[in-house]
Length: 147
Image 1 (cartoon, rainbow, N blue to C red):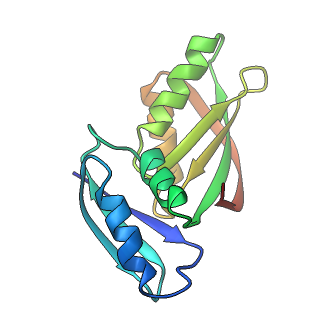
Image 2 (image 1 turned 120 degrees about the vertical axis):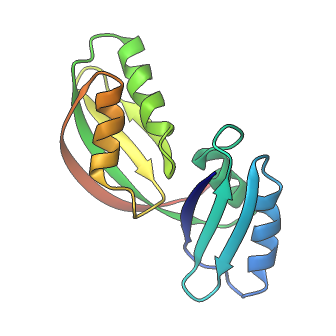
């Protein structure tokens, strides 16, 4: 089991927490959801073999809830082909809390969208290194995922 936290932009009213919890529990592999209507933090426990962060964020979006994210741009070395870029993207999106990863093969810039503020850069760097590549440098941007 994996636990992540989704930070919401707002719930409009506390009763919406129940609606969102029901939507997230319908995602295959989700075993528990706890929403704090005061802090807007949504703790989700799930089986990573059945669900991923992207699926959870999509479930929230599909029910009109906006999830706060941070965008991190990393520079990754050692990539020489589209397959390399795919391996880096896959390694990163396998990390709980990573919503998306997009590699620009020409520049080595890798845009990573994360939902969990507790994800450390070391975790992202380790995922890249385990895939056989070399991370260096970064820039942060806070955004809101919206449809």
